[in-house]
Length: 199
Image (cartoon, rainbow, N blue to C red; front, side, top):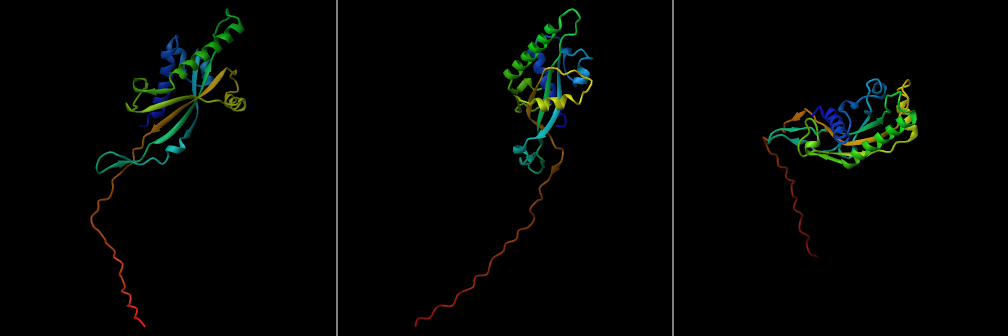
């Protein structure tokens, strides 16, 4: 299905909205450059996608007795999850920061509790038997700094990375096997060896 990436992102957002006691509009799929202006408290940003190497050679899938379709493109999706402090002039800066840390911890707890996502928790057009795995993905300070450097006018906020896999983008290319219409049998000629005469 071509909506697999969007459906996977929507699934993550739905998990967090269902597990955190806060208004839905404060949890969004949004870049760090836009999050604070939109008054978002918890932002999810898809920052990288890579193919799932061990699934790239999956066989074609049969649609019928006479037609098959190319295997889907399996992807690993990497999300940056960022907690933003309260926008308040009344709450002291340290308390705003601690609140953001607590929110990030709560989000990590929700994702830890939902490491395997199946059934009704999947959003969009996922098949009933599909399964997504949500995994905390340690990221170095260097890599984290590199991601945030894309948003030069945005203040760094506490963030973690999560991997969502496998997200399968379906193919629309079908193939029809050629019908067997003739058979060719090759027989090797057997040469009779002359008998060895006894001396």
